[in-house]
Amino acid sequence: MIYTVTLNPSIDYIVQLETLELGQLNRIAQDYKFPGGKGINVSRILQRLGKKNAALGFLGGFTGDFIRSSLEQEGILTDFTTISDDTRINIKLKAQEETEVNGQGPTLSLAEIADLKSRLAAVSSQDIVILSGSIPPSLPRDFYSQLIELITAKGAHFMIDTTGSSLLETLEAQPLLVKPNHHELAELFATSFSSIEDILPYGQLLLEKGAQHVIVSLGGDGALLFSGDAVYQAAPLKGTLINSVGAGDSMIAGFVSQLSATPDLELAFRYGVACGSATAFSADLATAAAITDLLDQITLKKLK
Ligand SMILES: Nc1ncnc2c1ncn2[C@@H]1O[C@H](COP(=O)(O)OP(=O)(O)O)[C@@H](O)[C@H]1O
Ligand SMILES: O=P(O)(O)OC[C@H]1O[C@](O)(COP(=O)(O)O)[C@@H](O)[C@@H]1O
Image (cartoon, rainbow, N blue to C red; front, side, top):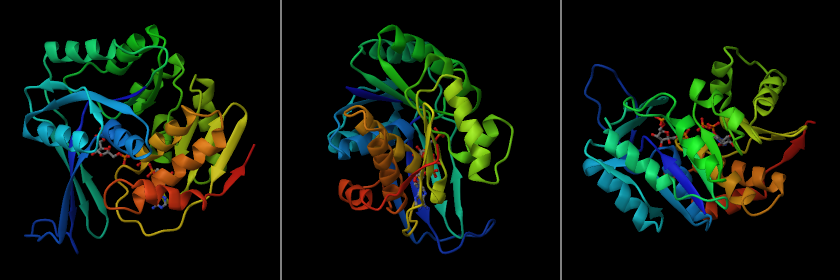
């Protein structure tokens, strides 16, 4: 079974405007509300790919109710911890350029935190747990490490998608996958990249530090996969960018959906790229049909 854990879910409020003028009254052309947060996006794509999974994390208030019922309507198993504070709303402004305004997240009580841990204690060696997204401010900074200790003690595998020291600290526990985008990777090692060649040593460094597979996503420029001594590059896919929110999460879902079923790494990477791009070309997350349409268009090059 695949579990996703979203410590800081959100309603993603997508707002489209012709132009955004700060300090003026702006009228919205179109808006959408989607259940969001990184692990929740992974769950939604896994479900569309026919992979049974359960979504865990903290949900509270009217915003939390919206997310829970949206996921249940899509047939996703939910096992969230109910909290007394409201789940956040993240604003995604699509005007001349994309601007994101993400909330900090709710305050959590000790009992709520203990409840999440007890739900996760049910995992076994057959399971994969996907830990994804930011940590609400009331949780200790090493909270992911605490969860990883609990998960690996049960023999389950995990993947993690977070940033900064929260990511680095978890590498020695050998995550199945980490997927920084190139900005996050540069920030992680206080450097900057001007070419694919610049990125290669840092992807390999994440493997050396313990990750089993590394994907470095490059937004509209494709992606790189590092595994063992091999490095693959996926060429960019052409299409009209509609909403890139959730593209990275979709990529993780596509990759893990295959990795959990076959040892064919290239196929898993193709699925990852197809899911990421299909989401970037959609208003909401990608549909199964949109993903299948893109699968044949992906070109992989083995760099090493
Ligand atoms: N504009 C785009 N055109 C085509 N594919 C895209 C586009 N944006 C994202 N993708 C696909 O989705 C993947 C993840 O997107 P990215 O923006 O790098 O991740 P994140 O959302 O984590 O920042 C990319 O590696 C790429 O395959
Ligand atoms: O937990 P964070 O880092 O604030 O990110 C949450 C946001 O990330 C998203 O999961 C999208 O993530 P990606 O675009 O990286 O795939 C949104 O749904 C959500 O608003």
